[in-house]
Length: 241
Image (tube, rainbow, N blue to C red; front, side, top):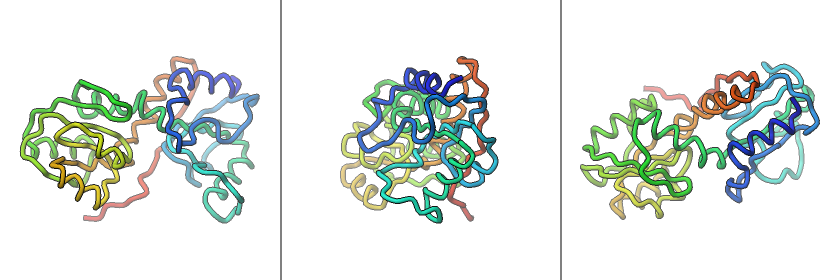
C-alpha cells in the first residue's frame, strides 16, 4: 500500500487539523509514493528501535521526532542522529499526537483503563463522575497505571468529579471544572496553584498515561487490512525504591 493511502486513512481516523498550533503531527519523514510493507507503532523514536526495524518500513509514533523548525542537522546530536539512521534505512515516519489525544487516547484511558464513563468532553479534557473518597480514588488510579506511588495534590477529602488529560496537561489547570485533575508531568508550581484554588491533582505520568497509543491504533490498522507490530516502548525514567 502507498504511504499516501495510509496517511489518508489515518487522517480520516484522527484528523490532523485537530492538532494544537505548536504540534507537528503528520508526515515528518518519507515519500507519499513509497510502497509500505511493514508498519511499526511506538510512542517515541529511539536508536534501538531504528536499529531493529527493517528497511523501507513506516514508523507511526505518538510523539513527533521533529517538533520545531530544524535549522541544522548535526548527526552527533538529537534528533539529527536518529533522522540520519532513518534516512539510511528509508524508514518513513508519521506522528499522531495531539489530534489522537482528542479523538482516541483520552477516551480509551478513561473508559478502558480507569473504568469510568465520560460525562463531558471539552477539547483535551474528559470529565468523569467519581463520587469517591480521595485516598481510595488515588490508590485506584495508581494501580490502574501501575505507578510506584500516587503523587498527589490533596485539596479535599471527597471527589465528586474528576478531569482527565493524558500526557502533560498542566497548562490546562486554570480551565478545569472539577474537584480533581488527572494528568502527567505535574510541576511544583502547578501543585502550588492547584492548592490555592482548592483543586486536587494526581500525577498519572506522561509515559504511563500514553503508552496505550499503539494498541489503540493497531486495532484500526487491522480493520484496514494492514499488518503492523507494536514496539516495546520504554519509559525514559527509572524508579528506584
